[in-house]
Image (tube, rainbow, N blue to C red; front, top):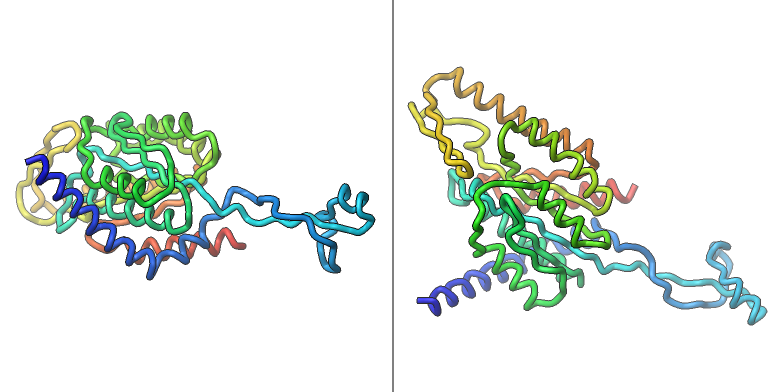
Length: 304
């Protein structure tokens, strides 16, 4: 039985590898490379000065020793550390169509991991619910990437809830050097949404200052609008709390939609004020076009 499960997992990982590798090679590789800059410049060599070289690049020690002007040559340090911080709380199990939120998060994480390895970047993984469930330190290599993808796809969390603040605290504690951090979540925060978001904001700002933090919001259309299907019992996947709604009532549907829109606008505002880019995805459409558009938009803004 265990052997069959292992074969099933390996087969699924291989399928995801083939599909996402094709996507990365054909579509995303250039966009990914252009949008993320290295940590700085590495010293390459000293060569003789030629007209047009900036004066500030002159190596005065070598120039004095040789009697001939020399300049320092630098190359961009391309290697980055990519950290995938992915929400595995119970709310991610919801999906009104063919794909759940967690399944979309998993494939997106796989695409980002393969994009990173194609650019010779390190990739690390943090899976969290209401506590940090798993941490894989950043490394390179195909076998490492396949392990990351396997955990993203098949990890079974112990926790049910969501604690983004605790995940960000963990990231800041274990990563000493600046890294590109993708925070992938449905942002279903516990308790009063506004209060939870306000409590989270200082940690978002702190992490954004230390790292290149990018938020990825994955939602489902039924979380934004209710269908007219009569009386409906809704259950919170993380707390088990239930509520009975009469979806045939137009006022109820409108109030539900207004609340969802208000929460999403608050999330956008908080991210913007915290200096964080937000990529918004939905399970009823492909993530590919929004991801490419996001990369290109970010590249243009950084290049200004």
